Length: 112
Length: 115
Image 1 (cartoon, chains in turn cyan, purple):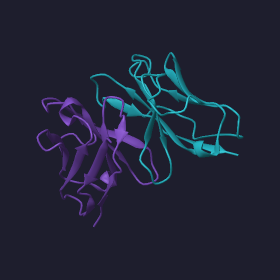
Image 2 (cartoon, each protein chain N blue to C red):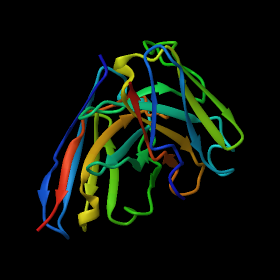
Image 3 (cartoon, helix red, strand yellow):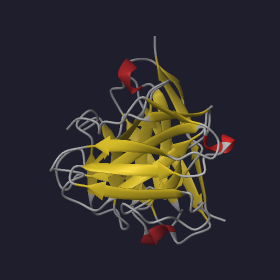
Image 4 (cartoon, rainbow over the protein chains, first blue to last red):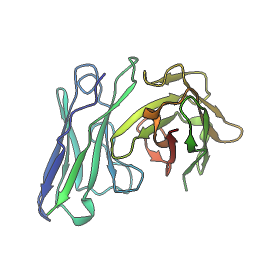
């Protein structure tokens, strides 16, 4: 099972909104509402930003939102801030197949 | 505070073995599934393995199946990854991760497989 497809890079100016796509298949993203998103700053461990497609963990800014349509999930960051510059990864449960979980290829977000 | 602290990484020759440990604190370790996720230098995240709360069920990525073994000691609040027959392509930072949504991540431990 291949990695989920994300754009290599997305950029925006402070205050703008950006959207990162995450395209999978009917065996993963399309079959389960179990897509999550992670933010990773250089040299740091990833941090959960969105789980079960659209839910935010406690402490995560409401500027981050998630959605899904068919085999594609999306992460939107509104009111872009300098501290949002990081790598972002999506991940989907893939059922009892192997691998059980599939990560995306990763997207570098640049704040201009 | 929830904490996951990995240890056991290092430099190993191809074909060698290492055992990673992950000490958990701040939550009821025995109630949660746990995972190992790795990240090769400059590359993306890759799921490696998971274990259910009581250790009775495990799952592995194809790339490590038959070489890696995940286990846990709920009395010691510790997760393990036994890695055998290591290859150059196993070189990565290995993260211990809590929960079905990969909720909390440790700081990672670096494994380098090289002669």
